[in-house]
Image (cartoon, rainbow, N blue to C red; front, side, top):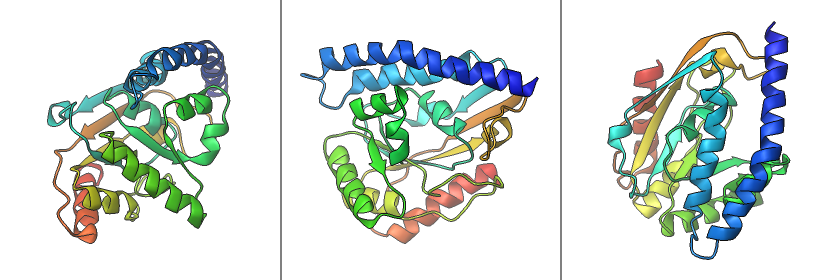
Length: 235
């Protein structure tokens, strides 16, 4: 039954993407001349991504801490990373940000094309030139007032345990003096594990938005503080 349910879910993702990408293209074409940050398109993308958790009765998503966010402020969001499902549940925040994501995802028909329209930021892991370009694009996004969403662990945790944080997100926050917002995600690894695409029954998923903090002038201290705050929730 899990295999059948998973097949239905992924088929819905493919079919809905074929329907919704043209809508995204229209929104982009209409709003691009006056919406440089692509905020309208991003909000539509939040709706698009949220459909998959809203309509899946096996996933009960609860979000805590929305009150900590100022929708007009610029932040560097950092979240722990357990599953592909993390991306969908973070879109449920419905706040403006630019994703930093694997370059391969931008090649996925529909979903990846929409990421390009949104001016999300690709990263090819292990490629020094790609890292340099990514950091420059992130700096530009922050300067224009867009927030960033990053997974400082760099990749999904296979065990669910919090891994060491890379410093890139915190270097950006310190350089721009933009507040950091730690986000703790729980339950997505049980619903959709790192390896494979088979969904696992009913699961409770929780996203906890922790209070923003100023990065100060120490990248190491900011990195440690963000990881400590997330670890305080996920263990």
